[in-house]
Image (cartoon, rainbow, N blue to C red; front, top):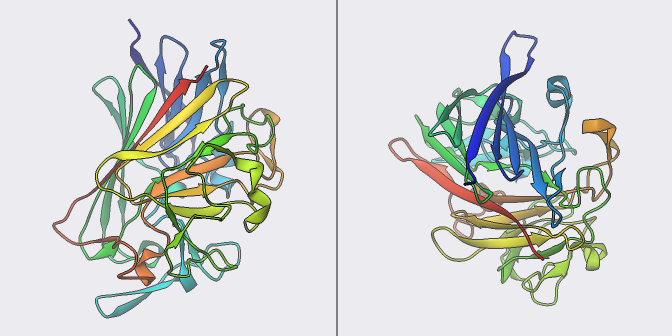
Length: 344
């Protein structure tokens, strides 16, 4: 019978003498996920192909120092709020908050600091790794102390479930996701332009030239953002900005299908289900020769991210966009499952 095994090791030690743990969850048929307590990150996923040959399918680094120095969010938990916030500011309950401006233009907030934090970690139930982080009041400019928990659970049929939990001492925005980069052909193997992608989205949120939402919700009909039928990523990518970096609106409630990604030559495939509001597709547009694991050089379109989350900059477009405000006494919980399988 196929089962799940968890092994634990030391990935490295920070300059402040914090030991970074590495957990590897594996099944007896060759599927493997490695996680590290720096950034509560997915450090590796090895998936067998149609010939049962496992290959690394995510981008990442070999050493802790590379994660400390890196700026690409490889595999990381990002927050307090994923994606951009226009001009690094928002108003909540009559008060204006100024945030760190960390995107490439230094004009807007991007992703926050959770990916650069050391998370407490443990295992439970023989198939789950639990990461915890207490974000202090004022971190990145956000109000309230936020207690975050991220759980990764692997099943023997290669379903990796991510549970995001949070509570806050003050009203604050919260929008957690994971920024793992996928290339189902293999880490460092080339681009993802031949990957087939489909997403059950009738609508998307248009962006301006600085990748900030305009506040509209538009139809995907007759746009390069229509992936309602399985389509190669590269088929219309030149009609988008400079690659895809956009939010699909996934209508409905509860946990539901969010999309599929397929690499036909290897047979590797992945489906996504989530309780979230939208799916951010990012095609590695800013990868520009980053050095990764095993000496690989990651170039533009070398991988893609499929980030389940609330709409980008929903803080500044109420009531058009769903609220992401967490108030004292409330509990934030979102769940996403990636199912890795072979499509013959």
